[in-house]
Image 1 (cartoon, rainbow, N blue to C red):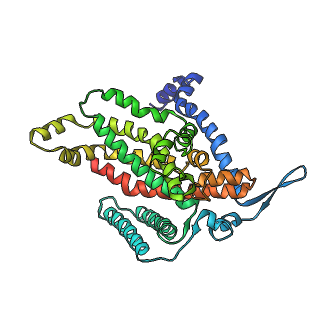
Image 2 (tube, rainbow, N blue to C red):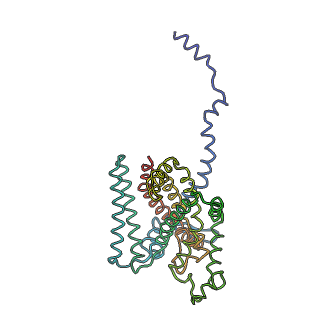
Image 3 (cartoon, rainbow, N blue to C red):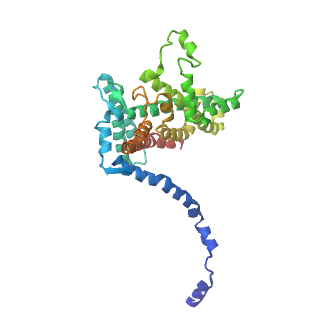
Length: 379
């Protein structure tokens, strides 16, 4: 019996090169993408990390890099560039403490909801505690510069663009998607029309809004002068300049929310909607009990994608205001670009890594407390 088995094994043909390639076809197909990722993503990430820990200076015949450790980060957080990055802090009053309390209550509620869930792990608890602590730190910085007599830096300005901009874009996109999902005349035309801004480059949108908002020669200048405010310029006031950046960003990215949410709404179970209408349910009740649970996972995912993209805003504040007045509209990405343009490569890399850290904290917190619960809501 043993001899027969050995003879059978010896007669089995060995796999050829073609069969071996077929076995490893998946790995071979992925290999070019991995190589490109290593060359164009990981390698620059390592080099920028070294730059963030060094001081770059021009020298005869080239340049010098002096290792200074965390010096660039200390300069941003507690040193000469603290006003630029974090801003200047004011004294806390009742309103400021009330906002901090509301944020703490919201985070504690999210944490308690996770603990009441079924899939609680030690790693999950530790990770969420870290996310809550870091998010609370960002809230304190924002309140200390916005709700007091302080002045926000590029960190808080970026958070304004992200939180306010993405929230408004989501609400507008959801409203337009619900409208275009109705059996109205010309809805295909409006679908195409709403999608047009997404096909325009951010620089083109920035120059368009710069021309539209020109109070001297722009198309709305005669209307503004008719109200007797012809001498007013939105670019000289901090909040009006930020509002203009938010308007341009919202005009560009609302179509992204719209098209994804529209696809989710149209893919919801139609039989449930029709049954609810037969039972006499109203539109608001149908949205609350049927539509929202069906589209919640898609909504959470599309907001997460938009959050990641919103942290990289640079074109609109750069073209519209140049980051001004002062530092009022300067985002962290623009902060890093300006530092790079002035050949302070170490500070530019440090700002870039701070942007990576902040965006990671915000996105992970949103994923843990919003996206995952929305997926459970669907099931």
